[in-house]
Image (cartoon, rainbow, N blue to C red; front, side, top):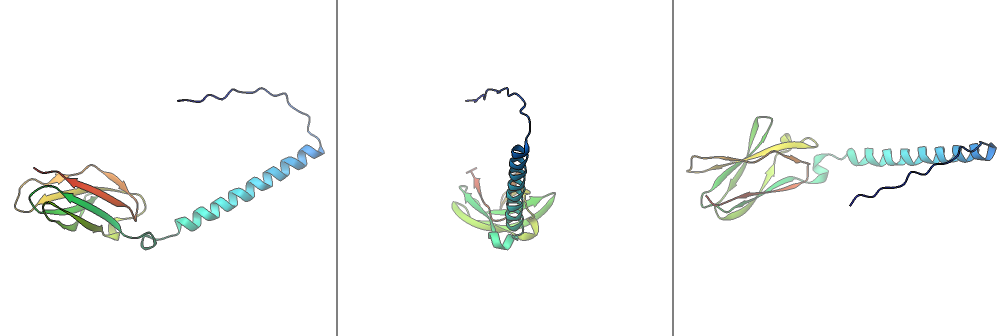
Amino acid sequence: MERIMPLLETQPQPLNAAGNTMKKRIFTLSLLALAAVSCSTLHRGSQNETDRGPTVVQVDNQGFLDMTVYASRSGQRQRLGIAPGNTKANLQVPQILMSGLTPLRFIADPIGGNRASVSQEITVVPGDTVVLTIPPM
């Protein structure tokens, strides 16, 4: 549902000394609030990936075959580990692949099979848990 706010027309008011003082106070308070928010954002942004915890891929392999799981970033493919058939496995994404907002694809290559599956690209933040479901073939 879209809310539409009416536009109120106001008449310009003459400025007096009290109005100028009030505007200066509002402007000063606005600058102080902006500075506080900026400092808070810089502090949160300075955390490194180790402070946020590891990035994990939870693989739900519903198929019979064991799968070797890879993460791919800009064509760089990194092996994460093996997800045995009919089980769930937690695999850690190496920090070398992660840098802030990172677009990743996941590849599941069946051991003893010939057809690898590639996921769609997903944007991952360090410390996220990504759930990858491999359906039965």
